[in-house]
Image (cartoon, rainbow, N blue to C red; front, side, top):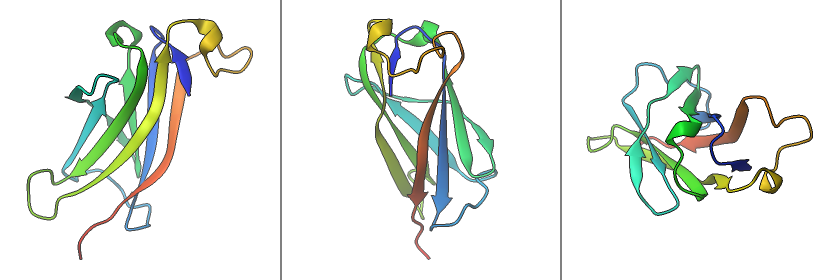
Length: 122
């Protein structure tokens, strides 16, 4: 999805664990966002069941291009696992370059990353 830089964005990412929609609350999770220049930052998120929600305010957006996410469980510890979402969305310079449908220009932007699966070691 292409979104004009400067607009507040909410990102939702559903996560399955070994193919099941298990709750994410209470688990040791780290979410990283990768910008178009390859810089990585750990981002805060909220949990709703098996989904993560991230808020990316327009005032913090500084780079045009593709953004990706990496979700770690037990990062740097035993039983570590990880999943990525490449090209989650792209920030563009002008409104005319957006993928938004007519009438969506003035509402909160929701980028739905679909569902990915973490695989754990039994």
